[in-house]
Image: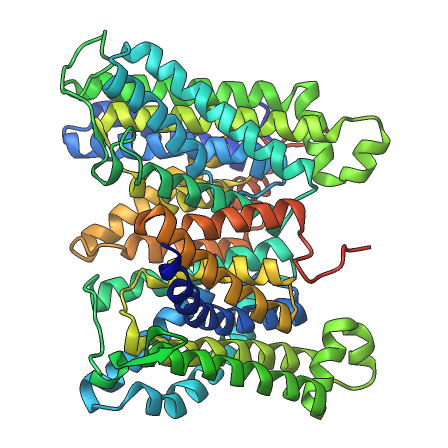
Length: 289
Length: 327
């Protein structure tokens, strides 16, 4: 049994990196706009389909598709926030949650209508090549996803701390009115964040597709994991999301190892409930004052 | 007990009542079958309305109580051979317990707002995974009651008119309880908690107790809805009764009809089902498109009808007396 634990942990880490990448987008949106985007999983599903169709019809490798899908989803996120979420929620926190829930219902069910519930996969032979790490065999696609997620987390941190736009985003997050007074366009910054968050999820989709599948329901599975990651990491914290994502990947892998495949995800939701109850500020966060 | 703020509200309620009675006279059985589904769903909408409407605690996981009611009743009947009436009552009790349990845990740690919505969602998901994994709940296959129509087994599937009448009675009972709750001291406490929890506590209201009690009452209605579903269909499955579509339907109906009103959940659920059915006919039964429609109506309602249809109707033909209330 103990010989199975290390491979399970390593596998969990590679899946956890994808969770982290999805959660990075969600936590950025929460940290700045203070809204929970329920449609995040549905946007992931759309990203998976985008990458799938690019591969299916034009034979574009999912890793190459990143340069098309990510900018397109940035624009989509920007427009969604400016055109639908902001005007329709009339400024109430509860309404934002409901509007994004409604958006996810629209996206999921339209996907079901147009693309049916068939499970689709993009078969790229090399994605399933194995790499030996510390005596454990890991799929190449997952290893690529792992390092790409770490890279993006690093880039995002540099963007937030070293650029003028990053500084503006942080200013809006901390003090919306103050930022407005010094001349920052808050509506634009909000939409920008939503765009970046959506771009993150699209990138995760492109990295996920080679070793995963896509159905219209796939977003729902991920959205709960993403919420868990964001809450565990401390709402709005980028490093927290990274740590929590990796941790949850490991929890899921070990849960699957010890409890069996069907109960593997249970560990994630139990972790979610426990975190919400006992440490709502997150594992790395401070208690709100 | 029934006080209407305006002629508009009275007219809207009258329209619903006339429709529900007209179903008896319509020659086609299709209408009755369809209205049975809508009524069954309106019970869980009424359940959501207690916490989400009066209490201001919007849950995204009312399937947790619905599914628990359905499974408690089904497990007792199928696995232990318990009498259907006893199992039905146990389903209601199990829903109440689950509601109180989730409420007690969440409110003990001050979980509220969006966090509360997510906690309830996570509970529903945990229960769904458990129900689909353990043998006693039928694992992945679900649970099937043996078809045995009769009063002793609470199965009236062979008599549609009787089923409809019984459902009307159950919905009327739940609404009467809601109205009673609304005008009771407890209802006033609950609304006070919704409007300003700190102020309510400062006035000496035990807000924790009020919120947990509301969750228990809501859970009892939710469990009732689940137990009714079981008796209607004689089959349950974890992805249906603990599924997200139950939780979503539970909240959309009241929000569109008017959250925190007695008639709102029924008006909203009935309206949505009519709309969904109309769309299904127009689009030749495309699956899932009714949810697209519901979601679009929800977005529009959040933006343009903050008080739902009952709130809109309240503004039409306002009656000249003071103290008129939203029914």
